[in-house]
Image (cartoon, rainbow, N blue to C red; front, side, top):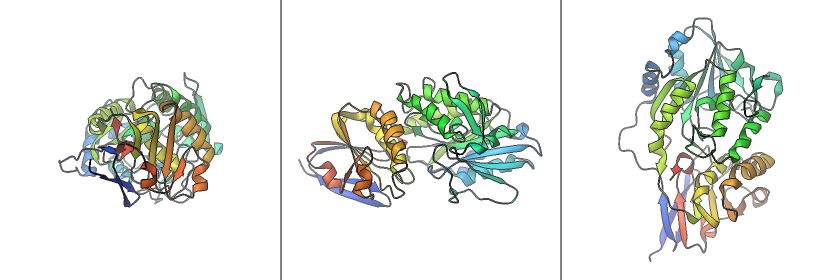
Length: 382
């Protein structure tokens, strides 16, 4: 059998290696239809809210409104989301809150599309600093509902984001903008313990105890919240949008996204995964790629994680314990190996759950079959 040239993304570069292994490449199918203009999608969604009155009827001049946007670990059209909402809002007292969850504040590095301007109050959320946080109760599953006061002090909270697969919350966006987005780090960790539950898996919503718990927390903190979410295809391009009630609109968006994200794959002894920035900027974020293919790794197999990690590992203890031990290991076969091909020094990688590897050739040397998943964080493997 002729050798195969394997290609994977590595930051802005493409890495290549020749292999005699049997290679199966899984990637998102190309959507031949033209990509819709984002502003038009958002305006159309706001024209037809689901489970809610239109935004214009939910708010009056002078009201305090908090719009929540993602931090820089998400590739999202924040400027377009904010603009579409401001077109519908009267003269309100506006707060723009950056949902950083456990990631920590942006510290002056505002995510793309976010500007501190005019009379808008900017909240650079720090879930590790209790001074700006308030506790409103506890969920039935025991998660403290502690969030930034800009949620509780608002007359209306508007959650934004982009719906795409998430490895333990089922799907990203929805209520996640409120909690964990603006939650206390310690409280978020308690919710995230549910990621070990069998129902906390990619694509799962209504039977996913982790998502149900965070949705309960968000509803306790902001019971009248409004949602505006984009719906992405498996290339990360927005193809639809939804607005309205946080739960109702989110679930409608999930059903739009599900067929765009789902692809078939067969389990293999060696899985190679890649994706693009910002998910590959740190091992903390790139670990999502491991979770995406964990169910398709055969016992004793290897996952080759291809991620430059130019912004480092992230908090090593969190990466090793909260992400690997709690989030990844339960999804993986008892016997497995994870290799990281990155720009990080070997000694830095060796302090994590992954073993360093210097080249793609080295990573796949000696294997007889390969499952290659391109853009893994955006896909659901069936």
